[in-house]
Length: 598
Image 1 (cartoon, helix red, strand yellow):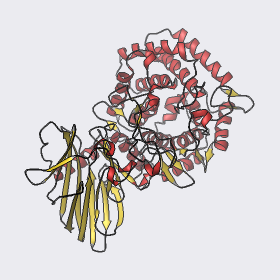
Image 2: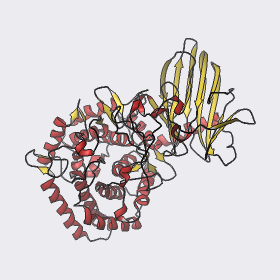
Image 3: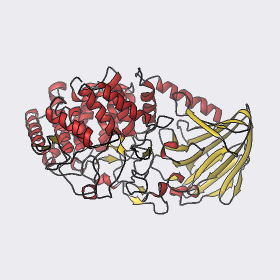
Image 4: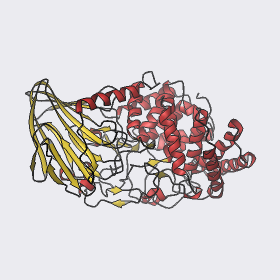
């Protein structure tokens, strides 16, 4: 199954991926970052899956039910049509997953195969029948899963099976519920009522969307996806619901993205606020403040869903990986890296929140002042950079630009919003960083800014320079940098992050084009007044989405396949912002740069 053949369902606590063939191949319960109980996505059927499909060959079409996260998959056989409805009700006390089979025409013979394997496919549970006779209970260690259905279930060779028929107008429901194994069985869930309530929730949520125009459908689906990747209890936004989907098929660039990155802070905030979702934006800002609270020198680039800091990385050696892409990793060692850009991201997110009228938070300002005091001592140090390279530290140009952003936004907080601070000193540090970047991050021989000081390499992060307000697109150095990236850092018109090589990032070379970077190029083209070209590039990115409008982190133009963890929040955030830059009155690229586009 290709990465793009999956659909997302979720309840803002966790999420599942459902294949076009009706196989649910990935689910982590009860949180995004919990161990998977279905892990066939990164292995084989015996590592856990829940398949529901006709017993004979069928033609498959699918869609989301309106503006919701309810998935409808139509199976058309020679004998009739049946629809599989998959959704996760918004969570109260327990987490549920519902699969309903509806008869549409004729009679369709269905087959169900349930292979539950806790702990990423390693643990076979002990399965018993419920006393009521309407399902089974599976237990392994702390985890319990209960499956209830009126359909007769049969156990065979560590697998639960069922065969049944649905005629036009008939339906069969299967409700799976997770809970701690030491507690009593969770009460039954009314599947029909849960369906109505889930649909009502999503439709009510989508009515808040303030985006109109030709790209509104793309924006709404991306915003729904971002909402689905939000951890409701804390407001944190996971980068993706998956781990170890490869950036190159068969390669080793396989990372766990089930955490919250600070690099996404400002663009995520703008996407939510401009889309009409102030509550979600405020929850995200508050998550940021709580997560980074503490000693300034211990600030991390990413945190867990509730702000956890220990995200130790280990390898799941018993999983063969997606299409043999090993290793499969859980946790992310990059959490311990030094990335100076996150200081600017945090300060900019706070600044954008002020501009959009978010409540004043004096305690948060005290924390920001402490972070600035620390940044003043280390902004001149080398770091791992935005892309989390696992090679030697360098003086990455974009990292220094974001250090400038940190002090620039501090100055604006005093000048525009009346906060207290040593503004004259901050102006001096800001100007010092600006001069340092223009001297060392710019190559006079190339006539462009470069990836790191004294290098000749390009990097897509340089496209963000004009969006931060560091220099305008009209500056010849910036304009030449954008044009050089267009010429030298694209594949089939899409933008790569950088030219991968082991000496830079410590890994074998090779990956797809990075979809968010193509949106950044479109944003720069808008700033340059090249709107028609920007529109063409943006629409090409949109066409890369699957039939449900979902996008991964990367794309391989050679094979026409999506790559990397899926769906990817960073990609959908970039898509939302570029769509707004092209068609909305509130343009994120203008808001952040504080300058009008051409």
